[in-house]
Image 1 (cartoon, each protein chain N blue to C red):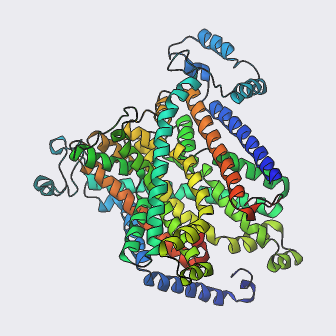
Image 2 (spheres, chains in turn orange, cyan):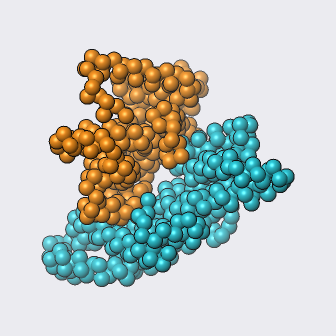
Image 3 (cartoon, rainbow over the protein chains, first blue to last red):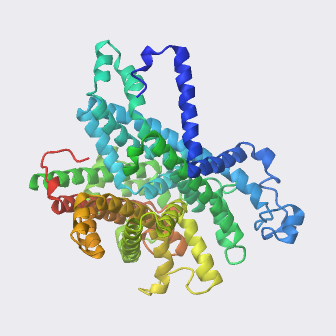
Length: 305
Length: 313
C-alpha cells in the first residue's frame, strides 16, 4: 500500500507520513480498550524482564530454608517481604516469577523471529518462482505438518538436548510452514500486479523486487500471525520445561516453577497457581494486542486468523 | 472427483514416505544407537559387535534401504527398555487408552462448542454472548497443562470428588479431568469459529426469507442455518481429532494416563528410541490419514468443490 507510492515522496515527507501513521495507530489503540489493556500488561512484563535485577526484591535463587513454603500474603511472608510467598526451598516466588519472564519472552520472541525469517524467505521463493522449487518446499512443509507440532518439538529436543538456545532453534526452525504458506499465497497474486510488472520493466533486480517491492505488500498477515504465535510459543516453552525437556531446572522459569509446584500440589497451591497465572496473563495480553493489531492492519483477516 | 481422490492419495503416500525419512534422520541425530542399547561400561568390542548386529557398519544408503523396508511394515525394532519385545507391540498395547481419551475429548469439543457457539450467535450482543466469548478467549490463553493441574487441585485435592490420576478401564471418574483438560483449548477456539460462521450464515437472505415465511426459530437455525454453516465446521472438527492425538502427550503425563503419550515421554527420558520412533511414526501416519479422509469428506459433502484438476488451497 505504501511501497509503490514512496518513490514520489521526498524523504522529509516520508518521515512525516511515518509519524502520522504511528499517530493513527496510537489513536486506534487508545480507542480499543482491550488492546490498551493488553499493551499495558505486556509492557509491564517486558519492563520487569529487562529490569529484573532492579525490580525483583530478592535473588531468584537465594534459599532460606527456615522460610520454606510460606503462603502468599500470610503474616510471616509479609513480615519477611515475600509478597507472593516462598517455594519448597524458601526462594521468593515473586522474584522467580520476574526472572522467569526472561526465558519466556526470549524463547517466544526469538523462536518466532527465526520462523518468520525462514518462512518469509521460503514463501517468497516458492510463490515467485513456482515450479519444482515450490513443489519441494511445499511437500517438505506437508511432511513437517504431519507431525503434531508438540510431538515434533519434544522428539527433536529430546534428541538434541534441552537448554534455552536449543529450544529457540528447534521451535524456530520447525515453525516456518505457516508463514511460508501465507506468504506464498500472497506472492502468487502479487506477482501479476502492475507495480511488480512496472518494477520489472525498469530493471529492478529480482532479490530487490522481492524484498523491497513485494514483501511490504504481503507482510500484514505475517505480522498478525507472528504476534499470536509468540503467545503459543510461550505456552509451548513452559510445557517443555515443565516436562523436564527444556531449560535447565536451575534457571528460574515459569515452566520449571510449575514442575516444582506439581510435586507440592497437595500442600502448597500457590506454587502451581501463581506461575500458571503469569503465563495465562502474559498470553492473554499478547492475544488482546494481536486482536487489535489484526483489526487495525486488516479487518479482513478476522475470518482467517 | 475420482481423479481428485487419486491425486490426494498419491500426495499422502509421498508425505508418509517423507515421514519415514524424517524418523530415520531423527535417529541419526541421536548419535550411535549401538551405544544407546548397551550399558555405559560396555567395552568397545561389545559395541562393535552390536553395531554389526544392528547393521550399523554398512554404508548409510544401505542402512536407509533396510530401514525403509522395515518402516513400510511399521517395524522399528525391539524396545530398548522392555528387552526383546517389538516396539510396535508395546505402542499398540497403549493405543486403546489414548483413543479412549482422544475420542472422549473430541466429543466434548463438538458438543460444547456447537452448543455455546450457536447459542452465542443466536443471542448476539446479549450478556450470554459476551460471557461465552470471554470464557472462550480465556480458554485459548490458558496453558492446558496448567488447567489440568488446577482441576486436580480443585476437584481431586480440595473437594476430593475425583481421583488425581491413573486409569481404571472405562471408569468415567478417571476420564473426566483429563478429557476436559485435553478438550479445553480446542473447545474455546471452535466456540469462536462456530459463532462467527453461524453469524455469517444467519445474515444471509435465505434466513430472512425463512423467518419471513413464519418458520419457527428452532427450524430456521437447525435446518437453514446450521446445515449451511456445517461444511467448513465438519472439516475443522475432523482436523481437531488429529491434533488431539498429538496434544494428548502433555495431558497424559499430568494425569498419569497410560496411553501412547505417556509412553513416549517415558521412552524419551529412558532414551528408548525405537519406541519414540514408533510413536512419532504412527501418530504422523494417523494424522495424514485423517487429513486425507477430511479432504475426501469435504468433496463428498460439498458438490461445489468437485473441481478435478484445481490446486487445493
